[in-house]
Amino acid sequence: MKLNGLGSAIQTAEVQPHGPDWLVRASTELDLLCRTLGSALSAAEHFGSTAVPGLVAKPTIDLITAAALWPWPEQLHERLRTVGFHFYKAPNPRWRIYLKAWEGRQRGFHLHIVEEDSSHWKEHLLFRDHLRRHPADAAAYGQLKLELVAAYPDQLGRYQAGKAELVRGIMGRAEAEARE
Image (cartoon, rainbow, N blue to C red; front, side, top):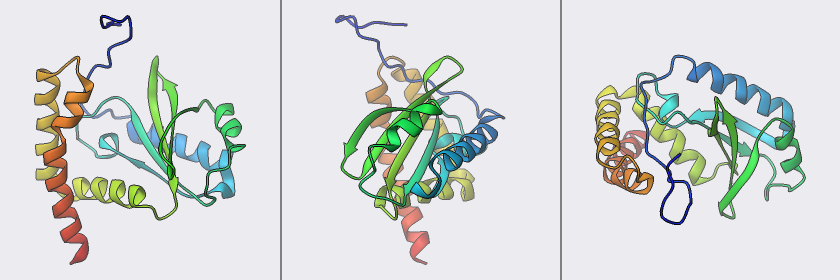
């Protein structure tokens, strides 16, 4: 583990070729979440780069669930802990993030719990579905990720920021296609 000058862990940017077991692991985890949370969820999906076959990705499986109840009931934190998910942060009042370790990685799974029908839900699934249907956009996105990791291996924030312009362009095409 690399440390910065203050003794804190440096978050590194890392991508890998698409893992053959990522889709299966995501499906297994989604089933577990649906059994654990039951009627508190209205939907659950695998999103992000690990959900796009053939796309390079950080080895973190992103899951998103639409909460049938909002605000998210605090007592559901304990149910999530029983299956290994631990509260990480609430970026805004309509979104919670939990982490679960996997294969020695603290961030093996990212679980996003969002309000049903929220823009966060719609935008992430629209982006995933567009990349699945448009291999040229997926390839461009994958190539950019490889270039950014090479340029900023110890600067996760710069890696993430470097994707923003291309992501906006892809989202623009995805939204235009959805309106057709």
